[in-house]
Amino acid sequence: MKYKRLKIISLLTKAFEQLLKTETDYNVIIYAGKIHDSKEFHAHSNILRCKSKYFDNIISDKNIEKKDEKYVIYKLNISPQVFDVILKYLYADYVYITDKIGTELLNIIIASDELNLENLTRFTKDYIVKTSPIITK
Image (tube, rainbow, N blue to C red; front, side, top):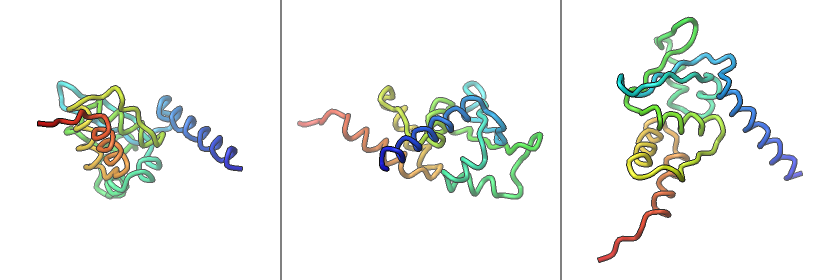
């Protein structure tokens, strides 16, 4: 029984990853980064709202900007590289950060904290603590 449950979860994760990759029927446009380093992301409001109270509040706001019937969100203070990590986390419930260092990890913590993604914030902090060299006098 447990094996079947894990297999179903794995299949769902792959399906969500594919949905993010293909952008099928997306209804949210997110602009991340500043003008010289920005990117447009496409997402699905149902997934964002289920995974993040922050996005639930933004998308629920009756004054949210819309363009061609799609919600428009600006996250100019989050780099495209960091937002890519966060979006993949929201869709797949896991994240690869072993290739990230220093400032990148700190920026993931800052952004995930802003977006109320407590598990990602905690996971990244724990990763830093576990992989940082111990400094002694």
